[in-house]
Length: 381
Image (cartoon, helix red, strand yellow):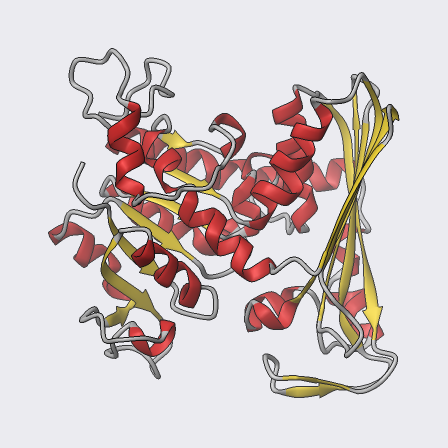
């Protein structure tokens, strides 16, 4: 296979890493898209740094016209956290047979939060023979890391997870979704009240595509799918994180006053028919001077196992995971294929197209040499 061609959709903070990492892994960037008028028309180097790349950032509205006229292997989508907001770009990619991978947190396992949108994208992707999925930090640190540890455990009763991150690193959309800058009263009304509902009411919202999941909602679903667990009941609760002193937020462009919300803690509890309970918490907030990222998971059973990672470089790890996932994306079955059905992510020391050349393909006589042997007869070619 020749060099993988890629477009970047969303040219904010995350893309500075995804584009640089992609270039350094031998990928050719052929297009970039955003809605920010301050960068539209400029070379992608204004975002990622370094020398000029001769790729201009276009208006996001031009995505479909571009894909209609150009052959592209993969799209990296780094915009917002809800799949409903990313769906238009995903659907365009699926329509034109462009494999797409996104940092959108809900996209990690959207089957349990927005099946309506997921099924639509899945149908389009299968019709055109491409793959759409979500990946990032949760793929390794909240997903595969935990499933690997589970594989070393004789009996599991409970899986407990806790992870924190600075919303300043991810842009204004994510900060607002976490309630950063709100008063306690506003948080209760705009954020927490969404979960003060019955299971039946939540199910109706999910089926209608109107449910707003916290990140661990989708992670718990992914873990259950990966570990072969059957979900009996799942709930979530959002709790505000309160500033103990004034904190400057460059992302929000404001000072968060003492007593206001810096973000939130979201706790998702999943009960399964197999008797295993998963309790996962993510804390996203504007950090004070003494805060830092942390990833802390415990598997309780026989034996108990705990893994703690302090100060992970969450942004860089997110972006590196996405780029390293590209060979598996290109080799996965067509459709909306979540990563628990892909091989565990691993370090790619060579240009990424080399991994597609080396692994060969399935027995489909019409298949090109880039299906990784993982298509199980459902070859996208």
